[in-house]
Image (tube, rainbow, N blue to C red):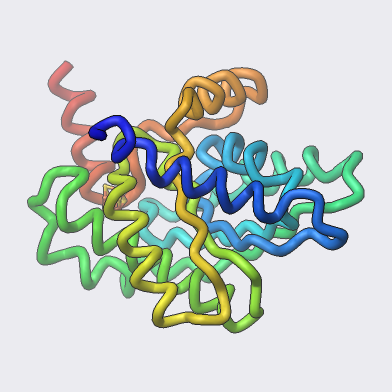
Length: 217
Ligand code: SF4
């Protein structure tokens, strides 16, 4: 029973994939994407079944130079991926507005990574992307973030479900990409493509934590 619970988002993602396999025209899935390394396996998982639109919406990242690095790594990877493909992955880049984004996170600056601050951070980015997907009437929306062991898949899927009521044109695609050795495959792909792999999650608080650890080593 407990095992079933642990893989239910994964199982639902497989059910949804099976429903959409071999359609004459692929349906479209919009995917909130935090960085290239986290996107590798979700792309592999979804590409044969769906037409993919990646939404890079990450105003949480600090400093701006780091944001540009992560963005450029994604551009580089997708340009390479698309070269020999008929069905090309699309990318959409949202404006960087770190100051505005951090206003809602500031009251929770003392929280540990994985706490309330992070839940707000997930939801803000997913909300903006889901809104966009809904306006464009894309068939599905999901986020790559469940690939990470540091991100709470339960919470991500709870947010996704909640947003699906707010944005009814687009169905939420449940995911837990790390399950069934998804994280091993993601690790293998990261090594294979030798992508820039960030050393901290993204916001100024996780950056400070990373610097403090470095100093105290
Ligand atoms: S640690 Fe990561 S998920 Fe949490 S608030 Fe910072 S950037 Fe967002």
